[in-house]
Amino acid sequence: AQSVTQLGSHVSVSEGALVLLRCNYSSSVPPYLFWYVQYPNQGLQLLLKYTTGATLVKGINGFEAEFKKSETSFHLTKPSAHMSDAAEYFCAVSQAGTALIFGKGTTLSVSS
Amino acid sequence: GAVVSQHPSWVICKSGTSVKIECRSLDFQATTMFWYRQFPKQSLMLMATSNEGSKATYEQGVEKDKFLINHASLTLSTLTVTSAHPEDSSFYICSAIDRGSKETQYFGPGTRLLVL
Image 1 (cartoon, rainbow over the protein chains, first blue to last red):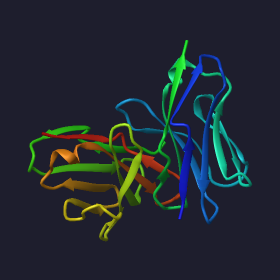
Image 2 (image 1 turned 180 degrees about the vertical axis):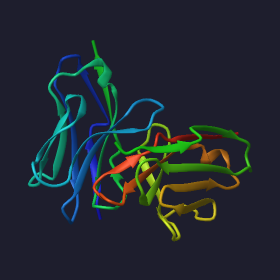
Image 3 (image 1 turned 135 degrees about the vertical axis):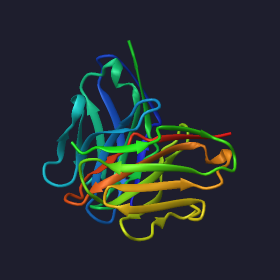
């Protein structure tokens, strides 16, 4: 069985500060890992994904995440937060062709 | 990029009526589609897996007679909420897997259902 734990349901940062959203996963097989962002009353937008290969994955809007197998982690980072980054972020795990298992989400707030 | 559409985006209905939600893959063929439900301030929960030409597979706790899923073609899956009640009010999101590449699911924009 697969599962995802997002540490911290709410993260607050100042504009220009580092963003770090934590995600740990559990999987008995090599996982596919994803980060999605959801703005209020909207659907999901894929930020980045890891399937195989390079463990440091770069996504859209300046976000990146690193797959660390030894730590079973896939934390999301962005060097400098922008006001427009305020949203709900979901980490998810799956295998090829299967449904995504989502974490509970982390609300990112950005203050000026 | 791959696009998935959902229709309608918003629906308000009276308790006891049925509502059909369509999920279409616009520029790719999807042998597998998934239906998720998201309650306010919560995460997405998988409801069912829809495979083209076969019966849907429902997650534990999801009533298959209440949430009817049909996947009649490689580009269309429908979810019908039968005899809807206020507790069925939620955000319903579908996703589709490109039959040519199974690594990524493409999500629809979601359908917000409000049952009065």
